[in-house]
Length: 490
Ligand SMILES: Cc1cc2nc3c(=O)[nH]c(=O)nc-3n(C[C@H](O)[C@H](O)[C@H](O)COP(=O)(O)OP(=O)(O)OC[C@H]3O[C@@H](n4cnc5c(N)ncnc54)[C@H](O)[C@@H]3O)c2cc1C
Image 1: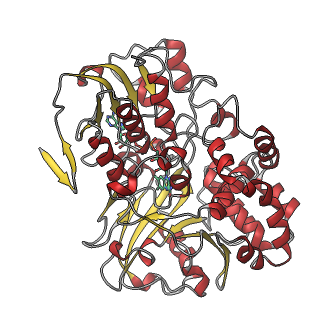
Image 2: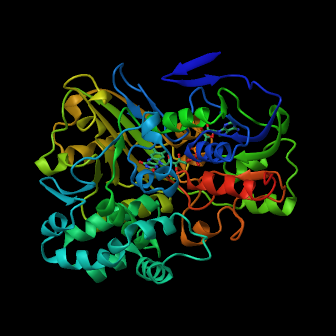
């Protein structure tokens, strides 16, 4: 079968019997690995289990015809920050970023939105007495934002370009979000803004190092903003795939790999899988000590996600809520912290913190004329089977009364639906494994050579390797570089 999609060719069968490298899994990291290898003139086959490529960057009409929903990732601060993406001609292959006026909104009260604009002055003006503290907190990192962000996405560089700046960032970000907010701010607005950004860590906000996640997303929000992809996140994957094919790379879909015997011959395999999935590949003779470590890799809470087809614009109480694609729906820092602690205690929060996106407000291709989409999820315990729809709707109604009346249709994915959609989301964990301080630096097992395995022709390239979750392709890029420096050197 041959599917054509704007110059993208997806087939079910490889055309050759032998390749230099096979990448298994076509998430952003699998695509990045394949591109890096193809750029180095190695013959590459990318094999994907699903009918469409992209892993966590797929888009589909999940509700009604004409409504395009991002099934997983929606907003791409890391995509536009990624040094790897920056060097790809993705715009020439169909990708268009859309930058709303603001990077992110935090819904503090029904009629009060805290707005992070790329412009520092406008942001500071909205933070009242804490404005100057907020500026001081971020200022040293904004001066050299590009180099800092590049280093954050390259955590094992033994020779960072700006070691003092990195050390300063590490020292400031080492605290928990809660203590950082208490130290820097007096009022609710700035505290809540920091908490909402740090909640992307999927960790309790009392935990050390979550402050760094809030800081990082703040720096990106001011340096580049938090854009969406025109036409849906799948356009990121499709642009990468078109570029890969232009370099001679081949892509097959509908090919779940469960054994080495499922693969054509190759000098190297790069696995865009979780550590536990790698252990299950038949015929892959990983030493038992390594397998034991891979199996000890920890996964975190799951997500409960709803996509809505809406008959009209979201009835926010205040115009400011319409300024960004991303709205953090969560109230005060105490509310956000309670909501983010709950899944770690095995509970569903009464008032979940919702990571919400309103892509159709900025991209008319997402919904029929006058109608809209809504994308929202919250963190729940791993494998949670509880129905969370009502709690999510109550939070939506709190900030946008009348939201329920607009719902034409909705599509729900609980943690097990997430895992069925993508086997990398174990128990609904969307970060490829807990991103706490310990596991961020040792993912999946090895500090110094995280992409290699004891088998010299097998590499891991998923978000379970550094720098971890998000659509940035850096795990795939570094993994391919590891292969090119060893087994694929010549
Ligand atoms: C609800 C949700 C919201 C998110 N929001 C954002 C966001 O807004 N911004 C952001 O940057 N990130 C977001 N993420 C995270 C982001 O999607 C992931 O971190 C990213 O996709 C990880 O990329 P990856 O290439 O490592 O793996 P994945 O994207 O998970 O891709 C793995 C691929 O491997 C395939 N595969 C697995 N097993 C096999 C097999 N045995 N044989 C063949 N193929 C196989 C899968 O089908 C899949 O296509 C979100 C994720 C979810 C689920």
